[in-house]
Length: 247
Image (tube, rainbow, N blue to C red; front, side, top):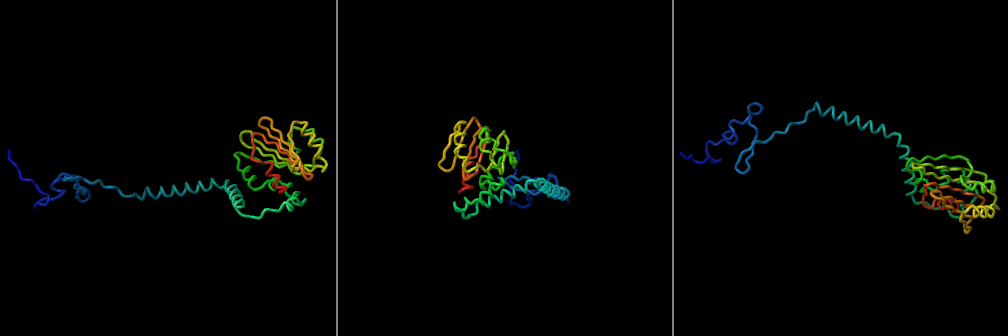
């Protein structure tokens, strides 16, 4: 058997890539694809194709169209987003709280209790308005309490009724009404007789819970704040309204 001398890569007459792959497929204009040497063996390097402008341009136009469509679809939510951002900025801004004496003036209470938005402090308003599926109805309907005999006895002059409804059958109805300054003793006896628990430390406050329904009533300074919460109980709901009204 005839032995041939070894071929060295640095030897004369050795053409790397051509002698080892003389039969390799040739590219454009007869060029052999570039090669690399790994572990003493020569291999072919795959050629990556370039970008195709006929695909890139339509793809870019399609992306622009999608962005435009999303911007158009988001227009209905922009007012709500702006209102939420405004509330957040107002809540984050440090301001001087009104003194208790100023908050108890008749002019202040009259202005606050004539409109649903003015009735609520900013944090409670934001909490209610950002509840899923919420709707607010402002009327002058009588208090929604189940103790209608008390309504007839006090003959309230309703200033505003704010009824909130939301997904899952949740609802809150709050009524602000003017009553006689002498109505508190009559109301206390009537509420206790109807199963309410009352406290007269700061005005008259009466509460009763039946299942998922919580009733809260506050009589103070000739005003009756009546709230009926059904399956929806924001923390300290009536107390936060009272603090907003009277400090």
